[in-house]
Image (cartoon, rainbow, N blue to C red; front, side):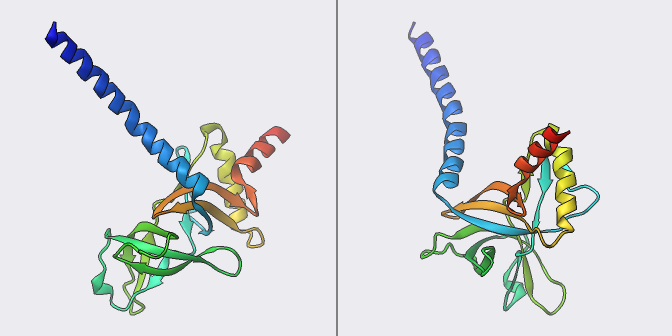
Length: 192
């Protein structure tokens, strides 16, 4: 009888842990979305052949390089901290990068070194943790068309809206000329 109680108790403890871990992950992401600082990251054009892979759009960003004094001090794949500020147009701008977590600034992202330039410019390219925007499969193709169309139009900037808090970042939305890509696709699908 005692053995049966131990097994049942262990089963319930394992089940609770399995529920707690994903619930905690969801809670943390929602906390960042609700209380984090929102930054607009201007997107850069991506490979025009296939920006959508499955159910997500691959994003790259204009503001993803930073000059470093000595590129031998940095290694691809190495974790870094990117401190941010906002430019005069309201888009995210890199203030500094560091291997050490900033102690005085909540507006930073934990990212990785993607690569360093091969020429004498000593530019470090940053690999942000928010380079994919997931969508419903039924809306993916229409979103791909809208994204491609507006990437060529410089009068309607495309940007990612990202919430940042304590080094963590959550991609909220992709905006085209101030309109959510989700809303744009929904509106276009209703018109048909």
